[in-house]
Length: 231
Image (cartoon, rainbow, N blue to C red):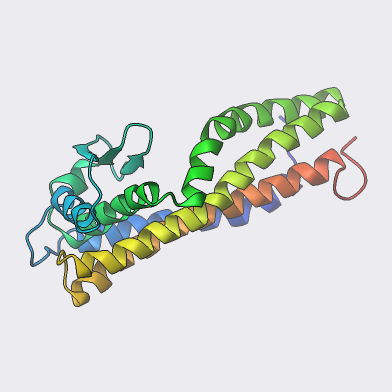
């Protein structure tokens, strides 16, 4: 098996950041999952109230299996909440649910970055799967064209990762503001719920950094950056 020190040197910072972000998200969620909101609202009820406060209707809120598998799907207007969020009245659950409701608000308000990210999903799925195959096949076969095509396809993954950052940040911003104005939590409770969202955002930062470092590796090894590819 080929061992490339450059790959591991570039991959290590992203891996460390990803592990740290995951640990922070899980530990922060666990901490505030034991703190109930004074309103008594569950995650599902909180999301529904937040959407109602902004006059957004037609969104189906349903339970979705998996730990922190929460997401909003603009294709069928569904807000999918994990069991730990859907039926819990904890500050963690409310924070996550309101964040996902923030995505539904983005969709309703025609928020540009969300539309762009949604359109990039199918292309990114294809690009992320083929880029590795084409790139490493090009390395093994010493085929520069395959290397460059692999780099080009992986660039879609990098673009997607960085488009995701403002989308996620904006959804949390909306959630933090509206969960108070809609009477879902008090200002003091909001500060605790916000910690869960801030920790979760680090996972997207880690993903973007990892994608960028991987692209840097591809550019160096393909000869597109630094002049020469690996012999």
